[in-house]
Amino acid sequence: MIILSGSDGGTQEHAAALLASKGYTAFALSYFAGEGVPKDLENISLEYFQEATTWLKSHPYSNDEIGLIGYSRGGELALLLASTFHDYKAVIAGAPSAYITAGMKNGIFAPVPSWKLANNELPYIKFKYRFKTMFTILKNGIIKKPISYLAIWDNTLNDKEAVKDARIAVENIESPVMFIAGGDDQLWPSARYVQLMEERLKNTNRTKEDHYLYYEKAGHFLAFPYSFVNLPANVYMHVGGGMTMDFGGTKPANAQAAKESWIEIVKFLEENMSQ
Image (cartoon, rainbow, N blue to C red):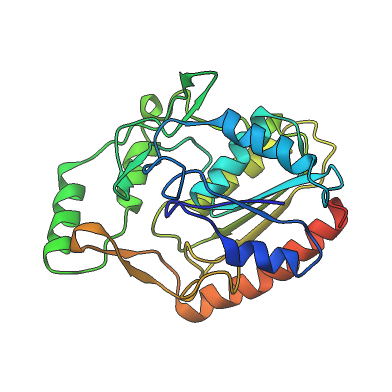
């Protein structure tokens, strides 16, 4: 299993250890904000992950079956990789995006491409802002009130030009996929995204059995139980610039979703991957 980090970058070593405890050869792959990789999530080559996949296939502890598991931006990446390359036996995307999202600089979204393929920048969502939305976000930042990005996503997703060419072609994925989403995700509308992808996949002639897990009261932090020091119980988090982000859900709902989804993750992998 290849474990893909989210927008915090680095490696998810705790998640790798958790999967390893179930008998899987787990590779926590760093692709930005770590040693020997770019500082920011910008113009990351998809071929880098293909090389990592080839390496893992040849590992002495590998049985040549590779799965992907990612959360948030890692979920977006897992879906993008599986729709581009056909090397994977199973894919798990927690709180994913249905579209390619803009890159990040210094931990915040920036108008730069996040991914490239064959040295070509992949199209990404162009954020659309309304004055009222930006004023509210600025005001909440000043008074230290937790900030939600949902209004920005709503404005953006309702503009067809903003999302043109940025959709991830999940119908091209040849492996079974497990989607996990919280209905109260305040960072981005992951439940809405998963519903869009579920509708598209169910309208295709897929022979793979996909799984869709929705947790109505959970927020953004609901995957990889025990793999973070403080998460997934957190609802709020301090980010750059002194802002506090609202990631949605409640501590009990997030923890329960993580617990229940882990049971389903293990079952899904047992059905689709060899240990």
